[in-house]
Image (cartoon, rainbow, N blue to C red; front, side, top):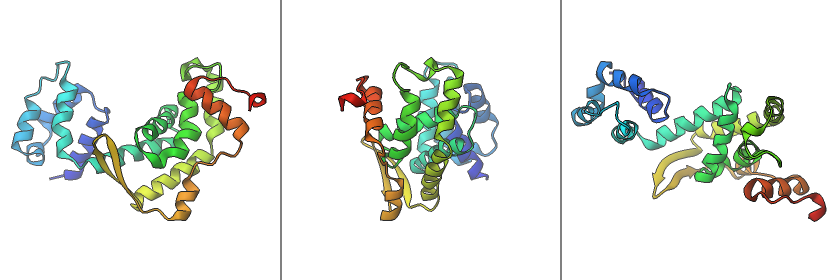
Length: 217
């Protein structure tokens, strides 16, 4: 039985990369899926009304119990980081995701999330969202992140690969992970505010929409 393939299929479904029609087809056509999921869970899966409004929730409820949550969250994070390194077509979404993940408890994403993700989530003054930027300004903003963002993201990937960062899963809405990084690595990955005159006004604007200028500091 190809357990790795079944596991990857489930990861993609939980990540929202598979349509409902594809999930339904997979549930009935995939060889040995019943063996992998177990008879009861497999029955729960094929009993779902894939055309109902709650189908996605029902699918997730069944499948999330069939995988290691920490392994799935690690795979999901690596997917985001690799898309940033490879400058995927929708790279701005992945960069913004690092800010969202940092806010949700991925504390080790602080540098990447605040240095880059925040700039995409809340562009500089006079722009309320990414969509308010012209195509030229979007391109210029993303290009301004490189090559530094690739270096910062690669460090996180290295720590996930050597397991000095090990994501365990969610418990009581708190992300649990083991952190055995060296002090030197933690310092390298830490957020450094080089220019407070520049950082403070931008941060206050993005978080609270407070327009503070250098002359006010």
